[in-house]
Amino acid sequence: MNIKSRKVVVVGTGAVGSGFAFALAQSGVAEEIVLVDVNATLAKGQALDLAHGAPFYPTVDIHEGTAPDAYRDAAVVVITAGKAQAGPNQTRLDLLQVNAKIVTGVVQDVQQVNPTAIVLIVSNPVDVITHVTQARTQWPMGRILGSGTVLDSARFRWLLAARYGVSAKNVHALIMGEHGDSEIAAWSIVNIGGVPLTDYCMSQGKCDLEAHRSEILEQVRRSAYHIIDYKGSTSFGVAMAMTHIVSAILRNTRQIMTVSAPLTGQYGLSDVTLGVPCVVGANGIEQIPEVKLAKEELEALQHSAAILKDSVAQLS
Image (cartoon, helix red, strand yellow):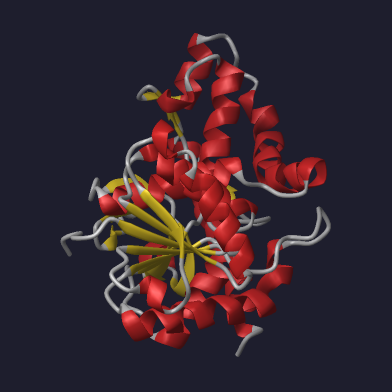
């Protein structure tokens, strides 16, 4: 697929959707950003507020739109619409029933007017909703993807960077599986500037990582809950992660990132969608290279997949 349009439609203009639109506008990667919301007044206000920043970031046309006409000619439709996570005691899986219905409806609307678009789903629980929506709409695999554990991996990298006093850009680390409580850290393949983490720890005289692995992973897993507890919602980190994904699609950079992908035998798993390393480019998910995990990591990933499959079964 050759991207002829750099139009991005954002469905849902709350904290996540508006934060993403703001980050995307500053990135310069989109030529048109259209905001759509069931609350048309909110979408109009967000679009106007963003448009007033036109002198300060790369040229982009920002305006509100109405479904389904707004989806025409879009290269990417990004869906953030849905019920928000209510608090630290509500898991992402609790949001399943209502958000699956909302997102499926949006994708069906897109299907009517723009069946060649790439659809990025961010609404939680993102892995289950991506899987269910693809099954219900028969949208081509690869052209529908979820935000997965891209943000979780960034949080993991940030924590390790802070621990070892290096740039997060030089920390290469992945969180895989569910974007949620069963996600796993692929410790066996973490490296800092190409140096395996264990070797790097020894060189820095900080060899106590084994004792802190579960603590670090728990910090990653609980990050969203803490932020929601502090300020009511997450927005900035996820907005940057979404911009990273959409940029890879519009620029066809073929970057590897842990988006929600449908598995067809990789890692011994099938009929499940979850965060694994994928090559993301103009066609959406273009490849799913299988990374070699330690035995216990693979078992944990399979456990995460089983949890997600149970959630999908709830909608049967």
